[in-house]
Image 1: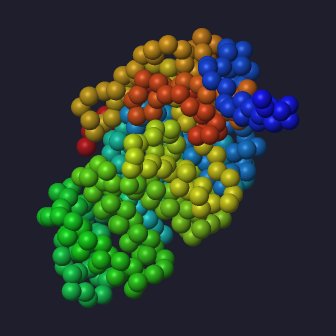
Image 2: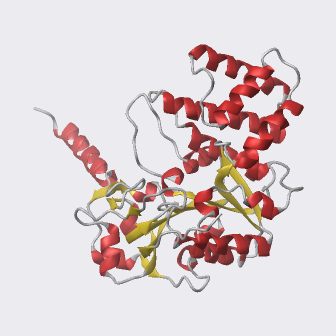
Image 3: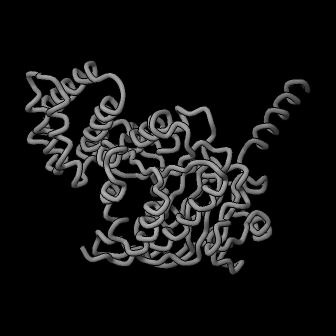
Length: 391
């Protein structure tokens, strides 16, 4: 038989393990209500319940449930207004083309650079409110995405590199492959040898262009290529796009945006999610990649909703918000009859609890210890589709 001492030790260890294990199950309506704050989108007070934590953050991540949710854009204007009331200079960074938004950022007019934001926003009628606010306040706006496929990048990137990069035996082939990649023909050849040649040329240029924007651009091009190859070969071992966005965000906060409070706008699923990809893949997120560099804290806010339809201007079909199969956080918020609310995930009742919310990426629902992914949810009762702007 085991002696009492080992049994006691085993009992203590088991108790500690159970205490550390997250509570599983939906929070009660009382727990939800206790940690939920009704907010008024017409006023710049959306962040008031968590303003202390937000003010201490180096970057505030704001995720949208879907790019076709037009109702998020007026809320984003109110968020920016409230952050600017804290007295800090605020810059905006988008999940958008790194080269098109950042190239000669000080010399190019803001209105011209904003045209390089993705059409899911610029062709959405509700997004006009954001554009007008950014222009009226002349806010700094930058991009992090390695998807270098905007009209500006397709017209300017290869000529820019042609003038920047020194002669190399493979320079012409490298630039042609990059152009093919931008046009989504995914290289003239997708053979391993052709990819290796592209990377070898790129790495040679890394040694020559070793600092500043141009060096970060070369790193971004490498991530762009790997991201495309990942799509061609699903067993690739990293999620390059979100990793690059996090790396580029950190670079911006240490260079052009060193002394500014930064707000990052993107999709929930890119900023933070709990989806686990099968081995040998490994998934990261923009926030996780950024936090790996950054000592100062970041703060992440995800927009969630109960019902409605999202409609992206660039796609023919709408995305109805899927009906719940069972209980979820949004159902509790609906039961509380709150059209808009902020849920503090750092609160003791929710911080260690594993529960369901509507899954990101149009999944019906997803269970997680959400405080490990986001710091707060901003809830809206109704998702409204983007109105279409005629080109």
